[in-house]
Length: 227
Ligand code: NI
Image 1 (cartoon, helix red, strand yellow):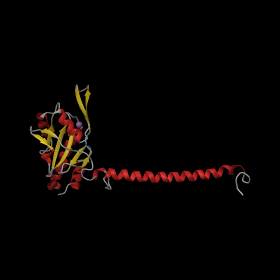
Image 2 (cartoon, rainbow, N blue to C red):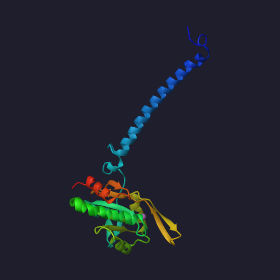
Image 3 (cartoon, rainbow, N blue to C red):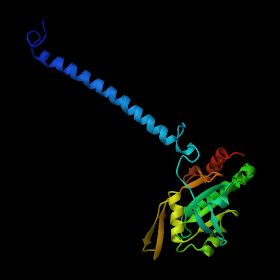
């Protein structure tokens, strides 16, 4: 005997197909979750290089930031990535006409190194603060020389031809764009503003946001550089 239409009145005819449909749906959803979970775990392992705590701790070189460059420093000397081998570059891209973000970032970088020189001088001496202009049109060697005086005494400020600067920015995944500013009667540069910590092998180690405090940067440097 079937319970179907004969005995249980109106609702029964619909009830059984509903249960089957719900079961099928549950089986489908569980399958989907398993698939998504597997895919998610796979993507996560790719992104973190297998480590547990994300981009800031990704294995050396796991993030494609940095690479060869050929630029000119604020004393007029040609500089390439080879000149910094064995040292940690703390690198920031910006421009000397920047009204606020760049000078603040470079001041905080300078303060972070000052703190480190007091707290862990053996680490501080392994770090070279580097400023790369994204505005080579106005930032020539002389402009960088006077700008560098406001910041850390060991800071290396770099410029070059437009193609050389573009190549360096591309290697560091730095975005920049000229923006006409009518009120100033001149142009501004829109640009990304990460502070990159590079390893003695020239590979990416970590980065700081431009609004990090000096102590946060100093602590980050202490955590990531062996004394
Ligand atoms: Ni800026």
